[in-house]
Image (cartoon, rainbow, N blue to C red; front, side, top):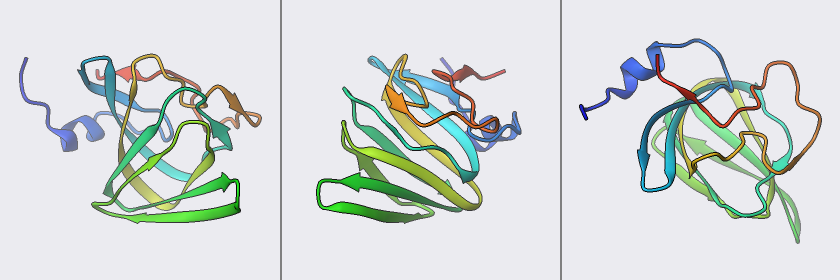
Length: 128
């Protein structure tokens, strides 16, 4: 194993909403992604989803029992979406994020709206 440069990993691809797996910790993938615009409403039934904003700003709309709300994550912020919470990430400008999820977790969750063309429904891609 060698150290992995996150800036180099992010520079190795241009696709948005198409995460790359930079390493694995126990049974969890550490993924980086470039995001811009809207993702889609989705839910992970059996796992939380951890977000760290590396650059830019990420908004995450949440549908909770008390109604909808949006959390705003500026650069350097972290947030965990609890399992079973319907959510929709959105980046108002190009943003770079790191996501921590169990290996094999789909980027569009277990239940979701129709997947738009700009969103890659994947369990993550290897770095090239």
